[in-house]
Image 1: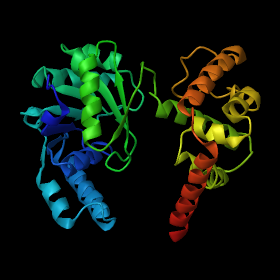
Image 2: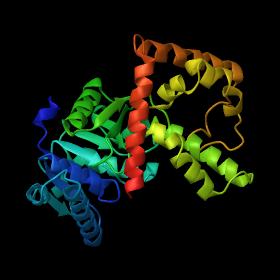
Image 3: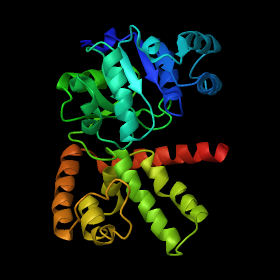
Length: 324
């Protein structure tokens, strides 16, 4: 296996759709040679149009020069031949359809056509790598590298190993994503939906409940979220937000005031359907762990200064929104 992230110079993007084109744009922007594979030439033509549009946006925002965008585009090649796409690459980023049968078929071919030292990373948003890597003879080099759309702009990437993924593969993928300017977050164990989509599924579940029960319309919910909690969540995660929400900190926000309501589970989320029922007792035990970890993370922090930083940033975000 390639030993260092700095050794990766050529990448294959398998699937040039909404996520795949964005990965390709990111990799080429950072100086890598990129091969994009898709099943038809029409699909690849669409991919290249999207990449040109993405670069135009980055140029307009001052993130790239026109010369840099042209150079990045020149580093991209497209093909409908998977073997050609995988030739001499150091890393593979797969972004195929979200179906286990299809993922396994893709990984079976990736495993057959690429050298055993090449990492095979999947963009899957909810599937378990343990189930996908069963189709390969070298499961140790298979890993989830799930971005948040669009990956050429949004930095978060979840790194999740399967049961047979090696620690070396996880570390290399983490370091490579950091080299690409991303913020890799390594999950400690597998979970359907990983981290972000597992949480996001709960948000969608509650939004469905509110609409279905006539509490609010979709327009009203989007407006309330966009002009309320969405602003804060752009700056800090839910636990940090909770620390600043009430005088009692996270203990008060998560446990004492809101926990019972959060346990209502009328509509199981997409990623929770197979999970065991939650209980108030277990949830309170988990909440104590969250409180302890958050307090340890913020030990010694001046919370008044944190609040001032938050408020200044919120005003900047509001200025950006108002400018549109």
